[in-house]
Image (tube, rainbow, N blue to C red; front, side, top):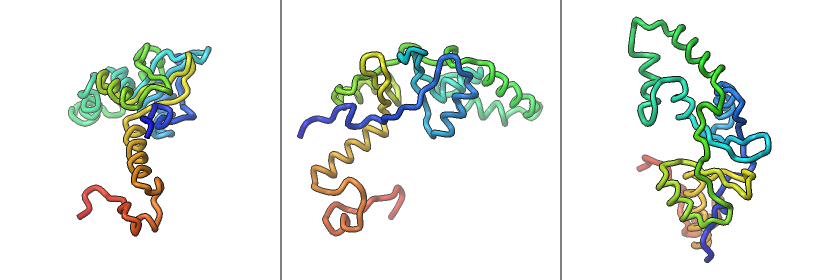
Length: 185
């Protein structure tokens, strides 16, 4: 069996952001598409950065790192003297006036489609990131997330056992096992 490569696991049809877009626009796109980060590409299509939910929260002035999300909730709930309407107005104002270029991580770590998947996973771990833009030349051709890696490894394991990679009713009787749910007894 040949080792998996990034292109075996990556998400294609990449949703991107532009450096001149507002955080409000990009946050809405992330919410609509149910993703936590987007590659940022310039007008020439080259990768110039990556913008994540954490970057958006940090750009509002609510904190950074692991405390950013907690800072957001604290801001909205902790001080009974704070007018929540004023707080939300300030947050929305910052989101509508801050450009992606001001909040993104510039020159992000990326990978090539032919890189071994194991090496890409080590790169994620080394740099403490949850997603990597996949670049061929200068063009973004995909995104690789931790979830993509897990799905590819599970698919590879099922295929090695001769099991279908999509759940079917015959799978249970074939010895491939039933899908499990977390917390099920």
